[in-house]
Picture 1 (cartoon, rainbow, N blue to C red):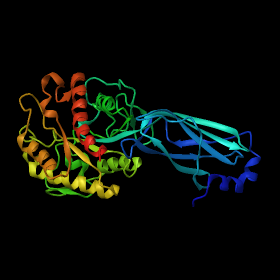
Picture 2 (cartoon, one colour):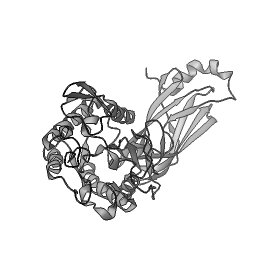
Picture 3 (cartoon, rainbow, N blue to C red):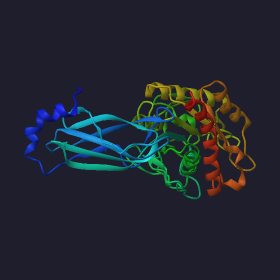
Length: 383
């Protein structure tokens, strides 16, 4: 039910007055270092939630202090109206794209402040979910840090600066990632905070990312996240898909720009690498599984999530590219199912520590992703 904040407080003021002097007011969202996906190049909305109100007052106000992308932001206080559900309060606060902002909230009675609180770092910029196998997440040989201090990470519950290892990954990996370099490069170009939600899991096939119950005749090289149903038939347990969608849904409908997918090494050339031939899928099968994964993710989320996918088939200098699987990955772009991601196979030995990236490679990989995503943003932000 929708009420103005003042109307609700007048109804309960007497009951709360006994506890005046012992205010308890907690801002649930935004969290410190939280980034909200901007709606246009210059405009955004911060979702506000608070709970545990035990103070007599008759109104609430807020203001943002900081640097917007364009223009200026005033220091004047704004009235905050909210939806009320018991002791839970929620509302939407319009704010220009930019940040970090300091959000200040104060509770008033008779025109005087009786309680004040704040959140130090709130951003309105660009948010991305990252998924796939090891090179999508924390398997680089050198941990990275955000140089700009304008990139943060979301583990599903909490936001923090995006220093490696990225939190919330599906396998708890602890090495370096391309996320800090990617975020820094985007910040350098667009001057808005960048949010990252990393969900990857090392050594995984696209088959392991399918929704629960999706069947296959060829099990992945490592048979985690799938189970055998009968001779010649396996199916996905859905764990990785559910984890991906849980993170996406935590950000909300249109709450991030895109899913960035970096995966393929555990599907391309497995038989050539000495694994049992019955575990090898074709490039055409890979593309079919990817289409299924993307279609189901959009249905589950309830909106047309944009996806990007990389060219990712590198195993070693002697097996640096698998043309069949690169063609399959390109076909997703050509059909308009995904947007074009980077060619990470082009990052050869000087950028690698085995199949994974070294520090130089993580920086290069992040910048390649930023170039591809930036080309897309140029189109959508200018519409």
